[in-house]
Length: 562
Image (cartoon, rainbow, N blue to C red; front, side, top):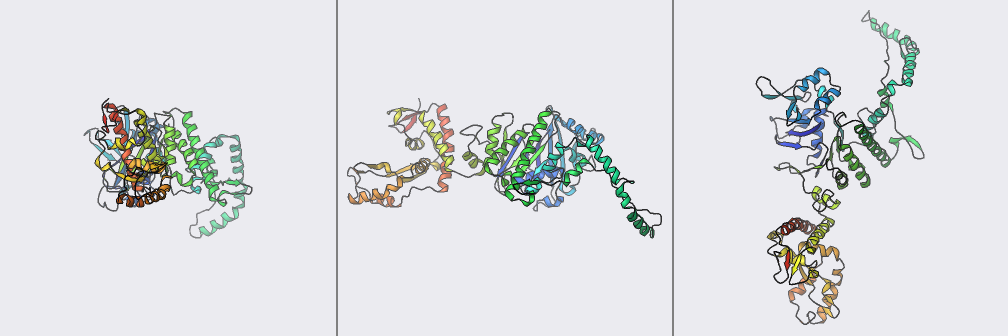
């Protein structure tokens, strides 16, 4: 069973009723700028199980008097089995099962929680007489559904204390509960309960100590209610109640409670708890078949806040392992989290990465889009530079160089005419991209002038100014930062030789002026545009190979058919 679809109607920043998210049964990533709505989707999943606040808190302020709700579609062939295994009563489970929809050999359960009536949930049910479907509250209170669907959520605002809380629904409490689940049936526990009874029962020593207090309270109370008797009773404790009493102790030379240690150590222990939690979940799902295992729905919001990059990559792999048998959502700003996921999931083609990119333009028609752009150069295993660009829209020189190298690989396979194959060098890319057959869009034919120290010969200087297409310009500046250091030498040479190039040709006045201004630098905008051009050029190379336009004619300076 998994969440197939989530629909938000005027929920926080998502206006209207067309905000529909399709999820993978395995792992789902949300990326985008701050305030783009990533955490809101995780909040919506949590809202379906246990609203953290009044429904009005979640309403979009601009959408008064409009439908406001969250709608969840559960899918899978094991929904009935999961209901039977849950703590939902048999009667309520039977009622919910009547709302199951079967399509294409898969069961669906569609549930809605309205913000105006947030304490109840409604199930999409079909009237057996009219065949019409409508949302109905068939369970009364929402507990039967929240018992059945209860995602585990780690919020970006959670502190190490939240992770290391001993509550039964917190990570550490869950771990201790899992490790001590057999305590209640042990001989030691039965002996403990007997000892507890000896002290706290009605005839026990503790009750004996309270007799005088009971008598006094009863006498004072009978002044107003003559027939009343007051006494104290202490029920036998549940094994789980002792978990909440725990503390985490750490000995780093001085043993104290963890909350007295530094933040770094606190977070290290919290991360250790996260990793162990993942292993426990993994062991649990491996012990049971996919059909019989309990479903885990895990939401993690910005896990990188606590973690060193190396730890982020370790966590990413752990989460991918969990997702092999459970559904996971991760909101992140970290390329390390994403890279770890791609590397891990590439080894399991049945568990593909589902990446949703969120725009911070809340009015955009396609505010959330599924990304299919990863792995252009290395299918299934994108580099950190590619992830940084595609997921976070940050251009880097590393990604530009990866793309340029890929373009060079295509060029190296090209046949040549009217020239030897060895003559096809890096600089040929300038001519190839500008050629008519390559059909580079006009807006991409952007050239910049660069100082090229290769113009320096043994006996003097030729023209050192080259006019290169932008990707080549950026590449050459990055690969040859030393070139500009010889500019003063070139200017000095022209001054001493009556403004003439080596060979006697005059240096035009405008060339001298340009030479003074050239500094061999590129801007962030240049880098971004160079990447954009290369991303267009690489698939164009693939097209030309298929069309057999892969011979370069040096004389014509154009591509011709083989």
